[in-house]
Image 1: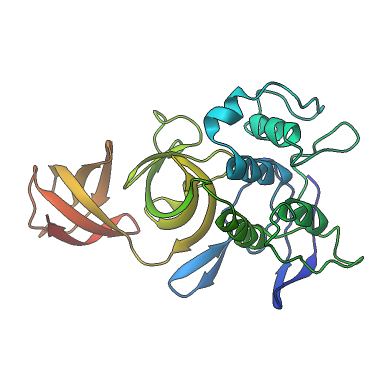
Image 2: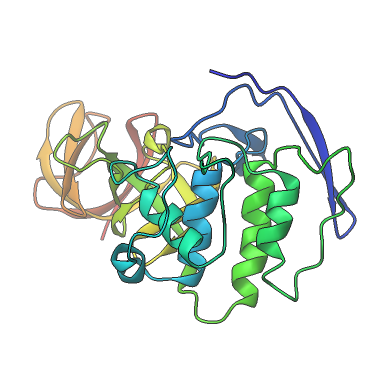
Length: 281
């Protein structure tokens, strides 16, 4: 595993963005590091964004999933195949001339560099250019910076279908093996999140960019205990409560004095696996 240690300052519209100490390259895009900013934590401020994840994001900016899945094979890179989560995204961005490779490889686990990001962003004529120098052109772009640039890109495009949503993570494959890999249950339904690792956000509200039911990127994670609404109480003992919401069963610790019974519909606020507030719907 290659070690990356860098400090990069990128300038966009006069805003300086610094990042340091990203100490790994990754293909699975383990985006769980955050920067605390009051009520929310910005995600990926000190991690690079992989070319694989950039390919996914660009593919979904210009195509729906049906088109991506139906794209005839065009890419012939030695470091991707149909078994990889990112293969279909790499294939279509290559076929459409959005991204390419070098030396017969796509290098999916390599970090997206500032100069590569500029090439992708240049597809948007309204996007102001990054300030690139000989010193910073090959430096990695942080995940957080890339997401902010990507938001500007999709806002300038028409009918991308990419929307911002706030969701509460209730279960992933790590907590419920009945769920497929890269699938999770939230308070507003089931989403998939290829290339991201979101297990660490259980029982936390996160702000995401999504297209239909596929999460494209995660922006931030709330530090405020979430309120899960319209829960059906299915079990209640002296010190725990069982609820069903969005088709998944969860148990939380609670006070023995909790005035609630099986069959009730309620909203519960949870913190560290415990109900700290509830109200009946």
